[in-house]
Image (cartoon, rainbow, N blue to C red; front, side, top):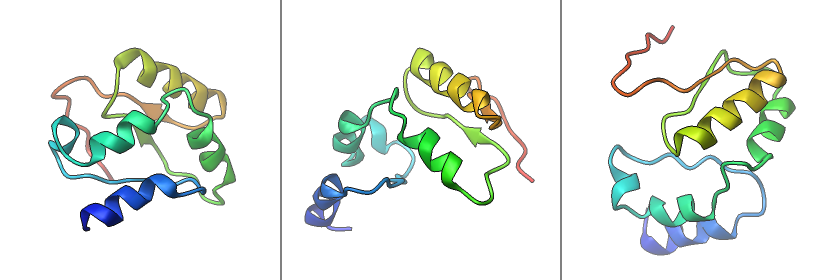
Length: 94
């Protein structure tokens, strides 16, 4: 993806999921998108509620611990399995 294409993601009006390579949050282009995202945002909860088939589990692997924990709690209130793994914890995916 070019720099221009990456910047244009900030103009999206619909919810979106941005996937980045390992380590990019410490110095890559995705930093701009992380600055504009709000951990307390209801967008993720609204997106999960709108899905016909929900994911078995949502893993929070980036962000401040307190923000991840708050969002995890909100999703559990929606009867969605959500987990914030501990550092270096291994999770077996089906």
